[in-house]
Image (tube, rainbow, N blue to C red):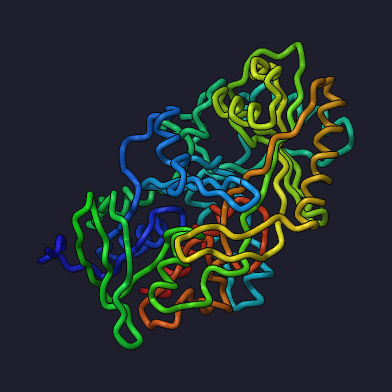
Length: 428
């Protein structure tokens, strides 16, 4: 059975995170018809614990573990990990891309004009973020608000929904671009799990996928893989590109938490402000999680006496730029360990976070266990794809965090949007 019999598409995009969704939207604006295949659900975002768990906390699906039991979280839903991310818009590592023949400055400037990128207004910063920022600045640290892609007129103070998905439409996610593409004639198939690509000679002639156990085929002149830093290299390997899935990054992080007596909240926009020290290789920022996530990480390190302190906690995330290394197993297992350099960066950032908390009057300071986000570099530019993001097959491209050529250590959303714009222009 061919589900798309009688339906002609100009391109197939596998995945709907920021990179893939941008390609879809830009091609749709050019009058192209795109088939979007997304493994996850398109259910309306409710901002609930249960929905969040389904998107990112099912082992073997959204939640993976390394040999060191470091958890890697990725969002499996229409919109990908942008549903659970904090819409932080760091600019790309321009020089690293430029040295590989990729200029992104024009695309970034266009994106800045199109999307509401700005620091949060003062009245949207929560009390923990303000307390942490005041303490850091008192110590002379260059702590400042971070750029966000947020429709701030829709954003609500004292809200803890960001991690679980914003039900108010305030936080930008790549669903915005998917919906725009579909409004212009493209087709989204949620729940479509792409198993393999069919290759003939130097071209991809078909995409095989399943929905609810039923198998289907689709074809188009162009195929773009945007299934993420883990999903994409597995499809590339299955197509015969054997060097995908090696020497990658996964942005390890931990959270340093302290307690103060004169705070009673626990609901606010995470990563509102912070400090990026490129020389030391870490980013530190406030990170107030919902109570149930706080409880998980607190219990994980056996700080059971702090389980009830969520509303009085001051949490600071420390995220490191990890060294490239490791490989993916044939079934998508993450075989990568933290190096001594990675650990040293996390420890160095943790010391700064502790200083900030102590200066803010916090007590009972502890660290959570490691986790990781933003896996990428598994199909790097100059290694697996060329400067046009094309693989060894003439009509197969990649547009997600897989192509980022260096370990970077920052949220990649703005970079992926820029890459999507550039790729769509090339395809046109």
